[in-house]
Image (cartoon, rainbow, N blue to C red; front, top):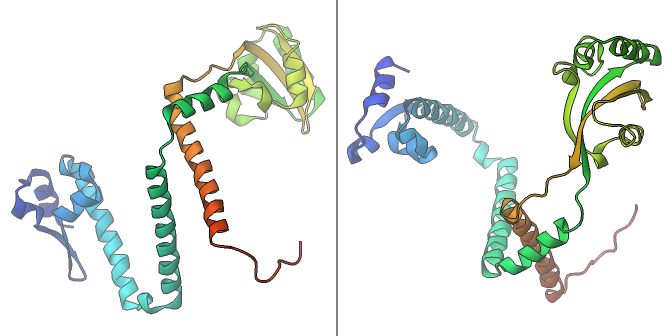
Length: 259
């Protein structure tokens, strides 16, 4: 790629002729500024994005040219994948049309929100941990803490969990339902600031420091409205598929066998 071309990309006037200007050729196939901006509209105002998008189109065209030379478009594999892609597109279009024609009422979305988040939210615990392979190692770490060493300093030095060790054993807020039974049982008996353990796990032992506890913050309706709407649309679409299946007398010609 010439330096002149790259410089031109940065100062080009976006007139109609400029849009049609050929920026590169790959095996004789031109790539225009219009194609670059169509591939990434941000390329219109940003030189770096314009360059990276152009190089991406150059790479793609080089691969397409190679496919043409190998006549892959005539292969059975290509034709099979094209047929599958067409089927996916048709299914998606029918689904989109159905959802558009049957919008979920906002009142129903709000009812679903109240159903999901109307009950008490689960507890969360902010924890630090030190993971040890053996009880002896965990007890040694606990002795250091009891002698006055900071939990986070000991965690950084000896914890087998290297991910949390890098931040002094900090795990952040953990939902109670995500904790293993032995850890949750221990945490429920602790006061904020306390250290407990060693706690036997399926693999190794753990020391735990409780830094805080709270109920999981409840998201606002606006925060989850789109997600709930999408889930409700999916459920209605599945029910519509079942209805269409029935209307079209879908049935097995040969019963399924085996497990």
